[in-house]
Image 1 (tube, one colour):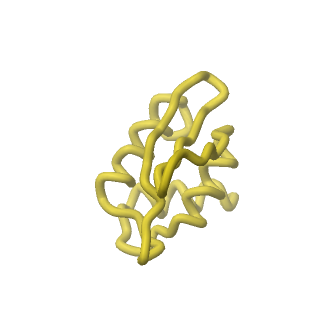
Image 2: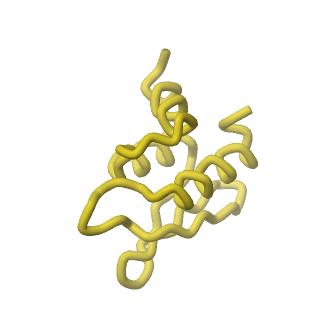
Length: 82
């Protein structure tokens, strides 16, 4: 199983410890580019034009449930999750 597949599997289990660094790594492996916006707001832009807007978590480095749901929805829509 590749690192990308392991990260997708972890994300799909909706853990309480999915980190921002894992998010950036996974999205990069799925052809998304990280674009910084104002403050802690970040945009992951896919080559297809799809954009996923999230806030980089702080002070904790773990994603909230709504952010994981947005990632799963976005990855599903571009065919990375079936």
